[in-house]
Length: 230
Image (tube, rainbow, N blue to C red):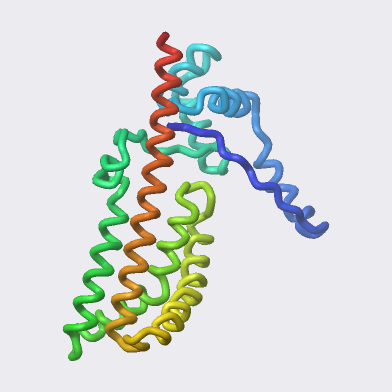
């Protein structure tokens, strides 16, 4: 599906304005690109083929030119192109290719637990170091970010990475503080299992929220198609 993307407006200093003159020229849209954006805004659930075929008939423009313009708009950040989504239920999303990230991270958590408690000698000890670092410094924060911001357009990949590391550094000491007031105390086994349960729980919340979002988009597009056909 092709969707118009909301552009973020950033304030710039005078020097940055001077440096950005040439960049702003590139940001200017020609008539064809404006028509494409206007058409996509009015028809958010169309595929690339639909947009190219419809606009080619309406504007009398070659399809290869329209496809090139679409590519340029996507490359410059004006359009968001998504894979056409097929699963129509939450369970369908979880067990589809779109939900593959969830199972990969679950397997990574389980594999980390196994290696932490079973590996003490080289060379597998180095795998333990790598997986342990990811398990402590990335996965707890990443699972929380995905649960809080399930929609892909809400945060950029770089923002997700930075917030994942930062929140992991905040969550892990918090878990340790809570364990300090329990009978188990701050030891390896309670910490590993607590972080595993926390991460898996947050990942499950994240995939359910993502599935609800994608299913709602699918239903919306289905309703639009039915209205158009009617």
